[in-house]
Amino acid sequence: MHAIYKELKVEEFKSHQDLTVNFGEVTEITGDNAKGKSTIPESISWLLYGTDTLGSKLDPTPLTYESEQTLVQLLLSADGKDLLLGRGLKKGKTQYYINEVPSKSGEFNEIVDQLFDKDLFLSLFNPSYFFSMHWEKQRALIMQYVTTPANKEVLKNLPEEQGKHLGTLLKKHSLSDLEKIHKENKSKQDKKYIAAQSRTKTLKEQLDQLPKVTAPLESLKVELRQIAKQVRELEEHYDKAADSNREYTKVQSQIQAIQDQIDMSKERWPLLKNEVIEDTCRTCKRPLDEESVEAVQADKDNRIAEYKANHNELLEKRNVLKAKLAEMEYIDASETLEKIRSIDSEGTPLREAIQAYSQFERLQEQVNEAEKGEKSTLESLNDSIFVLDSIKAFKAKEAELQAEKVQALFTSLSVRLFKQNKGDGEFKPDFEIEMDGKPYSKLSLSEGIRAGLELRDVLSAQSETITPVFVDNAESITSFKQPVGQLIICRVVAGQELKIEGKDA
Image 1 (spheres, rainbow, N blue to C red):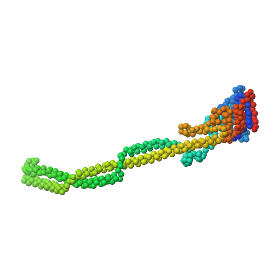
Image 2: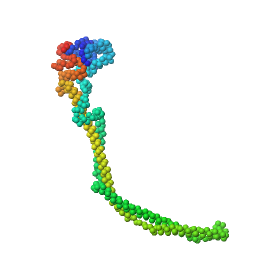
Image 3: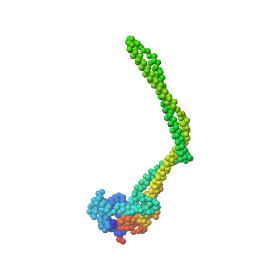
Image 4: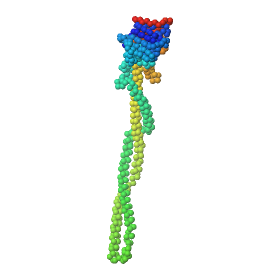
């Protein structure tokens, strides 16, 4: 966009009742204080945006005379096409005109927005406007025309190991995502590493507390196997003796059981033997006949015969078992059992030593696993630390390269785009314009004008937008470089009425 002002008409705007300005390549506005010099560029910013040249709300209503209608019209050329814009204020109501045709605010604002971005235009028109914005807006306005260094360019300027490792990771994730991933992993691995160190230490302490076994494990096992063999052999003898003794005891128990039966049988014999044969009925007491008496006697004889047969059978069984017992031998195995216990006790210290070996090996394996886990955790932690350091270095180098690109745009000004936090060393966006080592806020009026003109020419070149620029208080500066675009100079001349001269180059 290349904008050229041709003619400005101002009616009842602040101190100007009726004023026409014909612009040249250079337009000089001179006069004493309070003659309305600065009001002329103000009328243009009010026409376009309803503000003064610093973007603040502006009331154009005259104070020194009665006014019916304020009206500002500007004829300008936009890329070679003439456009007449007008803004009026009548009875508190704003009126808009496009090429003298009354228009709605939306239509008017759309035309203006197509011509210029507001912050860009006001920065190009009034060099002081840029510095009135918040630093974030200043930075954004400068940075939108400067490309961020490509990742490859930044990586190439990092130490080789950082650049190579980070370059591989950036193929899969963005820098922001990588930072989130490794910050989370670092936090997790920090805690995990502390826990792993504690576990390794605890296991090593347990290992140190185990009894020391100096004899070789294999010799202990051989010795224990020999003891176990002796014990097994003795146990076989003991088991045989025990089996034999169980049979001996069983026969003894059987003899005793039969003897008990014999004793009981002997107790019944006198009763049976001495049983009296009655010759009268037990119930009615009547004498029995001879045949009945003989039947009773026969029953007794049968019972005696049965008794003797049973008793003799018990005696025979007892005699057979006694003969069997006489052929058997009770083996005293107590000595063998004592030997078993004695020899087995010799294996106790061996078993304890082997168990200690086993416990030692198990603990040693746990220590090895813990150390392996600790090492793995530390590697993961160190990798995240390295990546985060690489990201920090990347951002620092990116900031440096970006600052170099921006700085290359300026001649006498220096620009700070980032500041480094003291705590974590992180580079955070910042913005400060300096001249000769002094921030803009500390510059004199003339230095501020030169700084503003250089900055607006950079913005003009980068945005490919050329607009007129006005320099207020030009009397405070002896000389300055001719800016890009039309120049409007406001200069105080004591005792002089308002004078406007448009000159072509």
